Image 1: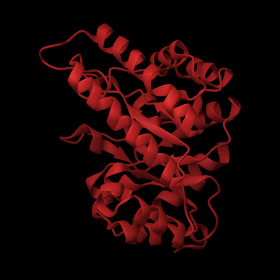
Image 2 (image 1 turned 90 degrees about the horizontal axis):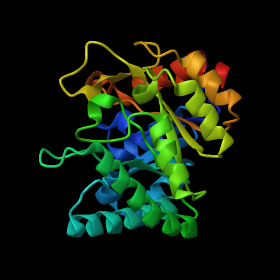
Image 3 (image 1 turned 45 degrees about the vertical axis):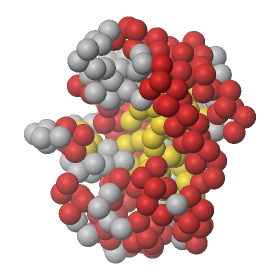
Length: 284
């Protein structure tokens, strides 16, 4: 490691899927070895090793958990499917509690070929988040609604902007519901600055995730997330907006990229850390 990589990286968290193909234990150990103090985990990690074992591994590595991904998929109009989705989200909240994660990231869900009513789908998200909010409040967990780039509206998230996510959070009216700002999904939004201010004013800015927007897009566009500095996102500008809004929480690097996954974890984490120290932390 270079001297810069070997030093501290305040507030930096590494999302598990940044190193998705690295075995879980190797990921945790490599993260700690780089002086990084926190990780964002996925429910697949829970499925892989079990909840108590996962918490034990994180604790043994001296790490803490900044988020759990993912809850959501709450757009179905079928009552049986809706009940199953709500129950699965309650389990996800329980998992977040057990892992010490303060927030559950909510990918709210998309449409079907049979039901293409975006307005109705968003209304169902509002209703279902309102149903889940008291359970999250009692558990001490926040629900971070994640707006995603509009190209994912059909299959992953009918929320495309931070303002749309805030509309739902405010309609629900629970302190447990807010938003995550993920640079990959919202960097393009001309109303991002006002949305970040609005989120801060209502205490709903719950999570900040960073990675770059790379071109050309991969065959699976989600895998076009890149190291900060490799693409088109203005990290100093967006991070300054986040800072000026009063956000002082962790900053989670979440990269889905096959080239990054193919890089040895020690090397990829070193690049992530250096880019964070250069492009993000000075403005945070």
